[in-house]
Image 1 (cartoon, rainbow, N blue to C red):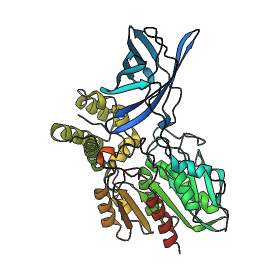
Image 2: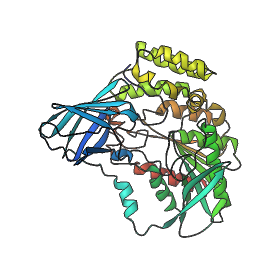
Image 3: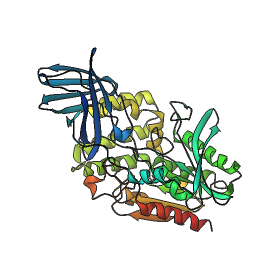
Image 4: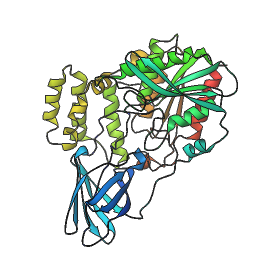
Length: 450
């Protein structure tokens, strides 16, 4: 099986770590070593910091694209061969130390990728849109740190309020799958920072918040599903309705990826509270079907095809999850059919989690049919995670009053790409959100609230 993608609407890459431990053949390894780890069409910048001390060589690794620093590992050198074990990731890096270059292979979950490190190889990729916002001393809005509660969970966020006027329309930003912060930071991109800036400049208040267990928010339960997260988003909306600066009758939700599904759920179930909904690549088809097509599209982006026995096995895995009502029996079945594939076998526990099983079984049809408020649905034609045509055609059929927009050459993060082969290069692309998407969202919200 060439490709693995178990978690819907999230990036393929996890934290990458490789740390090194002594001086080989008299070569000085002190300093910062940089390189790029390529996982199929994706790439991650890696910075390895080495320092010789009286106790030996110490090492830390930075993954700038993921805001990860100081990842530890153990290392040994035999001649010019360097072996690094990263226990927390179940990974190994084996390299040859030769004339100022560390040239080796990074292995994890049965898959191997080349990784070359050098003292002067590359650097961090700029994020110009974020930099422009942070450097602007005359922003026409103010940010306020706030908290609100959903039962036992306290959620922390940022409320952005325009400086001019009052009684503002408002929107809650709901992030996608995974432990996302209030900016939905992904590989140093901060799409929700950009959305908050664009909306506030048009006189729209914005609340974005850290998900459960992230940043300033308290943790929920390990068994929390998207239904609990939908209640968090609803609590955010109700908090906005208590603010005197906000027009309580004009508060909507904007969600990205799984957050789009959550926004749709709330619009269907709490239509009197949700004034409008914006879905940025929010899934509109059953999770089981979504994941099978997602794996096919990711394989295409990696220059291959998922077909034959590989497609049959992927389909069997998601059929099992969809039909199973018992985690123990599901785990036993998955262990049996993934026994010959280390990449899948390593993910069995995640596949059996309550949150993942809920997503695979989820069919958004019931909620889409109930959406009565204004709705904007957006997708990029190069989205490998939520297929553009499959998704938007379902919305057009089930929500005929929705405004639907397709964007050529945009990926799942709504970044501009050259084609399928670069559609997963999230970290390497400088653009965080295509400017036209920001304009279309702000213009649509202003139009429907006139």
